[in-house]
Image (cartoon, rainbow, N blue to C red; front, side, top):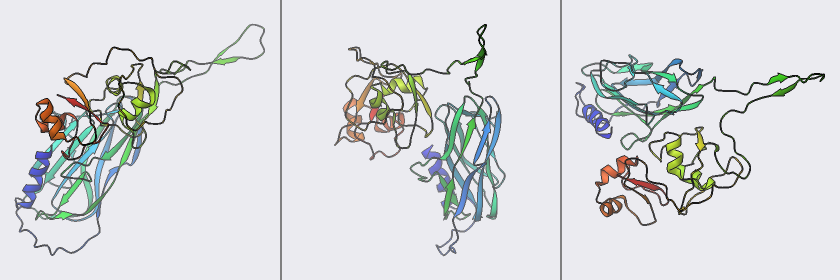
Length: 343
């Protein structure tokens, strides 16, 4: 993904767009707005909705790349071009895709990467639609549609003019809510001789029993990780990830609803602890350790002073392979208390 992003930027900078590079004397202009449209929408399970990525008030646009994140437990991207391998989104028509740096949606990780550029064409002015995404509702919940920062595009967006000069931009995220989940519907029951009906209902989903700890439901809040959630309930973060089909332990979404399983976490390392959202006591700790998830031969908890290169050398694994497996984009930025999967 990073290689393709760098490729696109190099194409722009190298002048493959057919225009002379600007000498740094471009007139100052207001930042363009890259936004999700509509900002908020609702659909039912299995219903499909089109979400556009629009660019407003841009001058001399020649190339663009965007990186998005969504909740794959709530939504999935419908492939826009079945003739090509993988899952892709559609070009919105604002730019002619003379060069396609990337076009890939991952319905497992919940990521979208899209980058195109025009060649030998004048820059685009004004507003328009860069891309169109067809989302299908999978399960009830709300999925933010956010711009995902990567190393080559910290804000999740790169805009360039025909000469490769970056264009300033701001972003505006959105969300899609999938409705129509199970509800509690009161059903009147009448006892013979009773003048009134007594409403009854069946609760939905697992609910905590006082004193039993888990299972229960936890809604992800800003700044929370699987590890701080695991500490709150004394539950293995890897078990939480497995139960909720989360492949990367460092990838959560605000508003994501997690089912907390009844799997104890042994030898819990020190670190931040999230606030509990349902009552009960932690599950009893057993002496049987929870095995590492599939694809991990070991788990390692980062301690102060660790470096990713040092950990990679300790386990005899390529540092880039280690970073990719744990969704780390900056090799020099790791945090004490995080648990790494050693591939």
